[in-house]
Structures are given as structure tokens and as C-alpha cells.
Image (cartoon, rainbow, N blue to C red; front, side, top):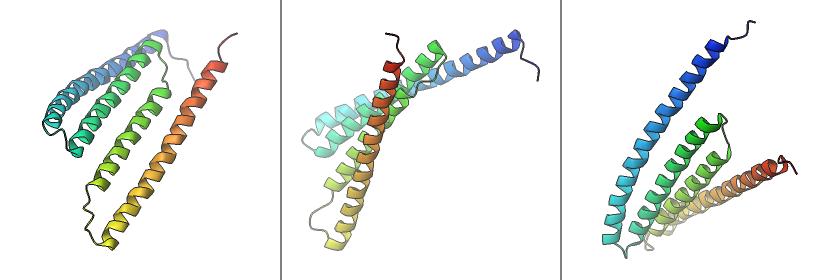
Length: 158
């Protein structure tokens, strides 16, 4: 099989960089739009401050913007180093798990206590199972981040 010429490698590198820049621009626009929506959501949340739902919505919006920023940082670092790092994706996964835990907690807390036992017990049981799975997944991702950082640390010269 013939080896690619240096010109072909340069073209592929240019295309790769162009695609990464387009992805970065799209993510930047998404971050600005999410931040704008988050600020509006925060303002509405502050108007309704004593309510629990407004607090969860505010935290959910902030965590969503944080996820987008983490992905944008990953694209930027990939452009600079030409290597795809796993740790930022694990961190985004942790943030997504935290967001889902907040949503499940909000949905569970919104149910009135006067519901029939059969209906509320089933939804409460499902919520507890989902929270247990999310907690286990969070532990797995935390251990993966720890092991990844340990592997990077052991690769450093003395």
C-alpha cells in the first residue's frame, strides 16, 4: 500500500483543523445561547426564590452551561495538542449525572403525599432504583478519572 504524500497529510490536517474549528464555533454559539437562557432562568428563579423548583432549575441551567464549556475546552485542547483526552468527557459525564440526580429529586419531591400508596410507591421505588444506578455510575466515573490521573502521573519522568 502506498504511503500518503506529505501534501495529502497536510490537506487532511487542514480539513481536520477546519472541522474542529466549525465544531468549536457551534459550541461557542450554544454556550452563549445557553448562558443567555440561563441568565433569564436565573432571573425568573430569583423572582420565585422560596420555591424549590426555581432553585433546581437554576442549578440545572448552570450545570448545562458548565457541560458545554467543558466540551468546548476539550475541542480547544484537542486543536492545540492534536490528542483526544478522555478526562474531560468523564467530567462531562459526572456533571450530567449530577443534573439527572437533581431532576429525579425534583420530580420525587413534587409528588403530593396524599396519592394512593400503590401509585406513589411504584414511582418512588423507580426513583430510588434510578438514583442507585446513577450513584454507582458516578462512582465508576470518579474511579476512572482517578485511575486516568494516576496513569498520567506514573508516566512522568522522575
